[in-house]
Image (tube, rainbow, N blue to C red; front, side):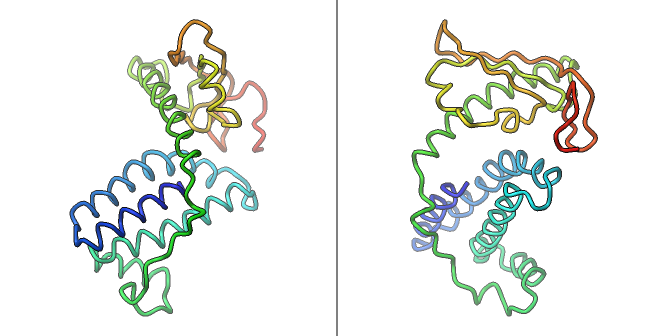
Length: 213
């Protein structure tokens, strides 16, 4: 997400200097709907709702959300002038106006193309998992994705890509089992209903106690 912010800021500055507000707005809208709403918010709400208040993951999420909010307010200010002003006044009551603020300077350290390439591959796997989950939802075998348990078969290249990645968190399911696919390069996903009882805190299914209790 930090890399996405860096790239978006580069594009924003280009469009803004050329008075190309149409493409500027399209970039911002795509970021809000695709990167934030359909991906980051969808995954990170579990951390915000269920993790301990002092957990490092929850704290880092809140820091990033504050950065994103500040950036979006200033990016959207030339387009949604009254809306951004109203939000700004609610958050920063002592400050005068969003339109007196300067755009934030995004540091070069936010750029990480290697990490972005890795996550592009992880998202490809996630999309295939979502298709498999949706098939089970359509057939009424499961309700929400949290009722699902996945078996994902990957080749060695993909196994390296997802190392140190919690795919159950990324796919928003109760559990994920990873196996090596020796036959071909395809990503193969099997979805079944998760076993066990539903946790009252995180809503995932466990055969034993949830570690969040």
